[in-house]
Each structure stands twice: as structure tokens, then as C-alpha cells.
Length: 262
Image (cartoon, rainbow, N blue to C red; front, side, top):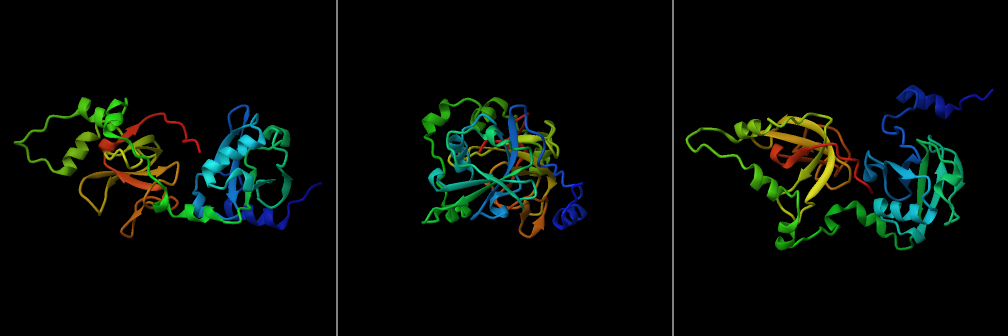
């Protein structure tokens, strides 16, 4: 009969049976793995570091996907498959032509990336201010469909100049399109050079101390935000640093958006 070690017993006492909601279950033909890194901390990777991967991915292609998430070049990666507790090493993913499925990973297991880059450039990724921002010309932006500008042109509400509405009243009127905590959404920036569209989950709906009117707090899928759910010392919701943002209701589109790919 197999008995649990001290680590497992203590872990279950603290967080329950270990079945983290974030783990979930991957679609058929995929596996859901937790990504950790030898240089980047859990805070840097964020709370959303469980990702789905196809079991048919070759190791070399798997590394390319991880590169987009953590920034370590594939040639400098050493991958280790570990158990769900991140205690026991199961195997190294060394054969570049083997598929991920050949290593028999299970949902909830951990892929630990050991960064062997001698220059250690990945540490700079923790400062998002150094990351280049996408730039698009106004001409190209105007050609795109589904942008905020076109949505605004098509849905611009007529303003009654004789009314005494405040910004807060305007925001409440905007909420005729229901936005509630837990909704998947797209955050649209009015500035096309500043992450024009970002995906995430609504975590807060209501008034705030830093501005008038109704604001929507969103936990983003990727670290493209400006806060951790707090503004000027006031906590509105909980998320990892740089995964939180606030937007006016008019800049939030609710929909069945999939989790943003890394």
C-alpha cells in the first residue's frame, strides 16, 4: 500500500485535496500543464500559467510555444516533466523529434524550464516597459474590421445637450449591455499603438476612487496590464502584477473568447 509523504500531507492540509481549479481538464488530444521557469518567478509568470498543449506536438515545436510564453530561446531550454507537486522529476524531454504524448504527461503535471542562456536576457522580460509595442499606421488601422473606431462609429449614441448627465450616468447607460464578474471579454484601447485588443476575464464592476463613473476591472490572459487589481493603494480584485487593468464599459466587449494563446 502506497502512503503519502510528509509534503503531500502538509500540502493537502493547507490547500485541500490538491485539485486546483486552474488545472482543469484539457480537451481530447491535449494535456494541461503548469509552466515554471528557473529564472522567472511565479509572480512574473502570473496566475494563468496552466496551458493546454496538443499531445502531437514535437518537442522542438513545444519549445517554440514555450519561447513565446517565457522568452527563453529553444536552444537554451532544458525541459523537465515533473509530477503535479513539482517534487519528483519524471523525465527530461531531450529528443527533439519525439511527440509530447510519447512522454505520457497527465493534466496538472509540471513542465519546468531550465534556462541555460549564458547571457540571461530573459530577466529583462520582467520589466514590461522595455517590451516593444506594436505600431500600426492609421491607414492600415482604418482597413481593419471589428476595431473600436468602427464600433464607435456604428454605435455612437446621440447626446442630449440639454441633460445634466454626469460621466457616471453615461457609464450606467452604457451598461445596458450587461457586464458581470466572470465574463470573458476583450479590452479595446482607443490608442491603436497600445495593445489594441487584449483578452481576459471580468473581475470587478463598479465605482472606483481614482475616477468618476463605472469601471470594469479585468484580469488579462497575458501580462499586458498595469497593476495587480489595485490602484493608488486600493484593492478592487486580486491578480498577479501586470495582469490587471481597468477600462470604461464602452471599451469592454463581452463574448465567448477563448483563452489567449501564448
